[in-house]
Amino acid sequence: MTISTKNSCSIHTRSSASFELTIFFLPSQISYNYFSHFLEKKKNKQEMEKVVKLASENGILIFSKSTCCLCYAVQMLFKELGANPSIYEIDHDPAEGKDIEKALMRMGCSGPLPAVFVSGKLVGSTNEVMSLHLSGSLIPLLKPYQPNMS
Amino acid sequence: MNSTSARFVPSKRMGICEPMHQMAMWDFKGNNFLETSPPSMFEIETNLDNLSEDTSHGTVGPSSKYDQEASKSDDKVRRRLAQNREAARKSRLRKKAYVQQLESSKLRLIQLEQELHRTRLQQGQYVGGGIDTSQLGYSETTNPGIATFEMEYGQWVEEQNRQISELRSALNSDMGDMELHIFVDCGMRHYSDLFTMKATAAKADVFHIISGMWKTSAERFFLWIAGFRPSELLKILMPNLEPLTEQQRLDVSNLRQSCQQAEDALSQGMEKLHYILAETIAEGQLGEGNYLHQIGSTIDKFEALARFVVQADHLRQETLQQIYRILSTRQAAQGLLAMGEYLQRLRTLSSCWSSRPTEQT
Image 1 (spheres, each protein chain N blue to C red):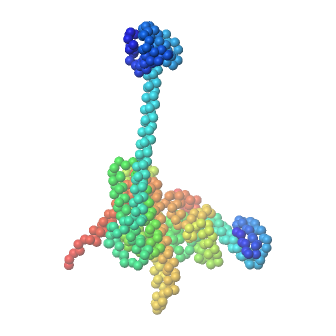
Image 2 (image 1 turned 90 degrees about the vertical axis):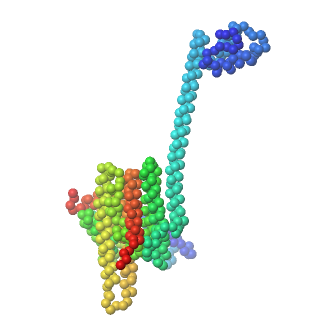
Image 3 (image 1 turned 180 degrees about the horizontal axis):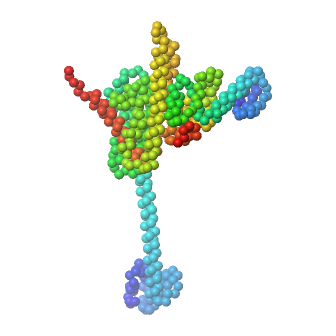
């Protein structure tokens, strides 16, 4: 990301965990923009980490909304398959709900809800779950977490 | 050897000997026999001998003239046979290449024909043909998205009918798998097109799509979220296929089960949506004339409805894809034919029913 203004100052940053910056001259406006951007990036990282943490703590995790009927449909499917998924209702989380939704979108979830994680990895939204199930690949994924394994 | 200048030679050597003979007559080693008095027989014989030795291409000293000639003739025969073999081989290769070229051109031709039909459809050159008015029903709509969809659907049905009869004649004929494959691919893409059309139309007016007003009445009876039931599809297909292998049977049974489970899940989701929508519209009725504040939340639910339509179509698409994967080309063609005929039958049933003479009271 490069910000340059008429005052011919440039700031270079690299969007990775460690920020590399070259500061020649810092008018206050630019410093504000830079820091707010920096803070946003940090928050995004935090949300992403929270999502990842939640996913790794639960074998099967579904991010859902209590009002979303498609999320409900996916939950029903998992119950039908004998799995017992953990449901995280993001509308019951006033503080971070929205951010989690944004983080899920950034992770590539086309929905973004419902977002299904199995074994800490993102499986996807309804489309992906359905495709997997029809091709017979969903049940093997769930096998380790089914309470009554045949 | 004869005394005349026409030498008697074994017939095998005729072709080669005649030029030799002529060489002997004219300009042979600078001597012109015709001008000079014919040399004695012996001389001519010797000269011919010399000539034949010269032109024998390195046969080293066969003792008698006949041996020489025999081996030479053998050589020539062998050489001719070899050349013949070579020529025959080359000719066979050329023929093979030509036939292959013909085959691929034929495939390409079929492909192009199909594409032509498709593009003609998309450009609306079939406009106005065959849109059954009994299907339109709700056609007095000011929604341009829906009007477009109705027209496109009419064309889709026409194209579907054409593809069905093509498939039927293809299966009855002796068509190979390669060509059948093209027809199967075409059929699959046709359904894909329908799902795309429906997704666009659902954004314009989801209730029109989900109520199935664009379908015939008999089809509407079997409607499940704006289309056919995927599990129903499997039931229709199976009896019409040629025998399945063990592995195929297993795959189909698994597919049937997962299809049913996915369908049930979506159905339950729809029920919940139904319930929530009803509640949202019904709440705060008594005494409140103004329901504007509810519009916002209901708009969300209507969008959720569109998502369900898309999801149901996705399930149909995936089921078709899995069937395509499991079955052989011929079986897939039979399946597509069976399904197409089933839908055709429903449509015909509807028009028969709607045009039946009503009883006079």
